[in-house]
Image 1 (tube, one colour):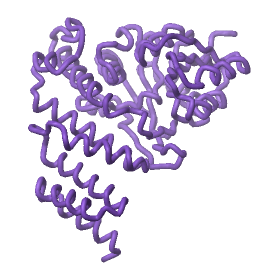
Image 2 (cartoon, rainbow, N blue to C red; image 1 turned 90 degrees about the horizontal axis):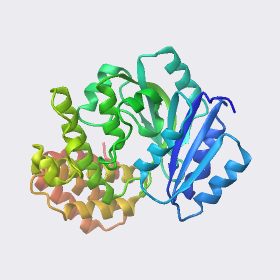
Image 3 (cartoon, one colour; image 1 turned 90 degrees about the vertical axis):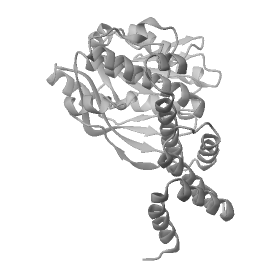
Image 4 (cartoon, rainbow, N blue to C red; image 1 turned 180 degrees about the vertical axis):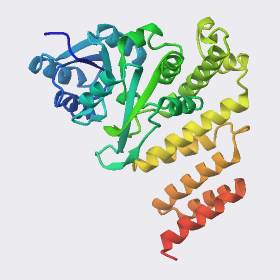
Length: 354
């Protein structure tokens, strides 16, 4: 096979539920000249035989099985194996639009100054139902401004130049579950970034996508990546190069207060709960919200706590547990009185009042 125009890299760990849709959305691309590198990260379900069947039927599919070592190690392995100048990321639970690779390749060829190109996504639930379209800023200046607070590229939508990726050292294992955000920040130090305004991926929301357990480590990684980026911008050494693990104590030593850590964690977990609610995953949303409210919230903004109580109230109402619903709503109003306006609006809609 001649050198492929694009190398698509995907890691799979126990992803059989949505795997066929994800793989076939790549194999059915309008751009045909690509290689599809899939790292089976020690799956214990039926992912391995599913992947092997595709490899047998399509020479573009290259499956590598290994012991479970996590997403970062798998992605780094896939990127090392990539033969093309361009690497496109894909996840095992999403669906790429038919022209995704073609659109991105045309853009990257026309804009040699761009190192990473993402795109808009359509959120879908586990059954594939649309939950709306979501976009990040399209232009480099706006993307870099957004990166100061959080990610500005959907990881499974990106296509990046292999040379740029290698030049910054690839993914870093120290920022577990925030490896993509850290990579964008390091690439932004040297290159321009962009997003297509077109939807190029259906991004699936489901409970196992990012567990509540992972949000804690992810939050630490995000905060560490932000501190590291700030240090580099100020001409200082990257602090992540001198530690072995990102912990609460390590972040405190870098100047990230306990209050900031708590607020970020609560906000990210609240956002996860909102996504599960939006996707109709009500039991998972309720369990997570209650778990957060029972945790240490000493420094967490009252607005965030009130938001969580409101979500709990809505979830209890759906279960027709009206007493618990009113109690949660009362907690929300006591915690943050301004929440009463959207609460009343929701009640009026429920009762169909003008």
